[in-house]
Image 1 (cartoon, helix red, strand yellow):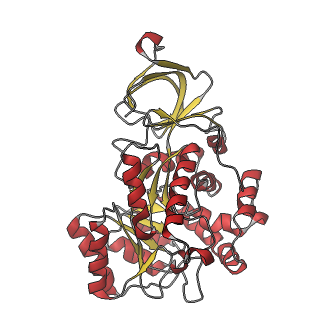
Image 2 (cartoon, helix red, strand yellow; image 1 turned 90 degrees about the vertical axis):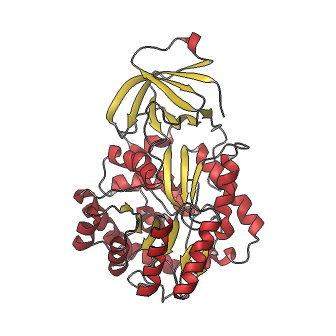
Image 3 (cartoon, one colour; image 1 turned 60 degrees about the vertical axis):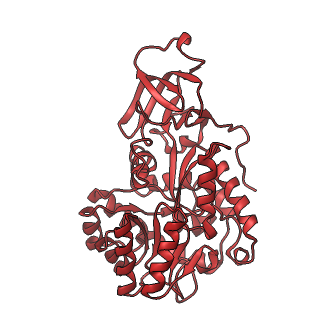
Length: 410
């Protein structure tokens, strides 16, 4: 653990608790924020003093819907060696950290690659983001996400019990259950379709409740959304077909909403982008034309449901479902385009996402006692949320992250 004492003088703090920039001086020691003061901090109390005059400080960003080993076409994923995907997953995590995305929730990864990297990063052997893991994406035969190589097909009550218990045995943090189809898949994989039978679903949720594991529920269609909320899912992923009934249920529940707006909006292709950053991403991440058209078809309704949820006060977190490392930056911008203020989007990508991962006591805001996951920005993210990309420094648990070799589009 980092033992140096840093003084960050003259910072303008922007976080969930500060909707307007607040001038403060921050002391970081042993990886944590130990003091926040209005008075300048003297060099004799710190090993290193940073003059942050004119800079803006925000908490480290989160992406709570990732698949860290993604990065090649689905057509190649099934044949790829496990070692190749494992190496790429670690590189992806490190590249995301360089962009200020300091924590990731992995909601489907093969052979517990996510758990392995979580344990390795936690060992302190190498600097990486905090990972919160789900292991396999649990679906049914003829379920969703099959081409990814991260889905496990499970049928019947007995198989559900065995697979979920095996996930627990391997050290996952959450259980990811697939309830419906999605935007991208073969003809039988449609978002309105619910895949598990009632007894399978009840068994899965009951077992998770018995063992104290929270459920991450992929649900696109209305029937699956309602079932996810009624069974007590911790998070609803996607929610492509939210209507007034679903939104009211969400608002009156303890379920968080992870909309993954980028999945539909960014996959529409370069025609729909409106800045160079998005255009470059879209050009370098093409998808099959059939899937692109399905994204185009779904995007409008997806955004409308998001706006209804926002207006109703639903708890919304930041998850992109895009390949690392850029996903969170694209998702935050997309949430603003679809109706959030910059401050709301920053809150979703920091404190609310930390709450989703049950880590808000240690992360998510700039407060005394919390880990020093800190982004120093050259410009105000409240004026333009894209200023989150205007990085000056990144701290992960008080350690400086080298960002001068940030990833580029290939």
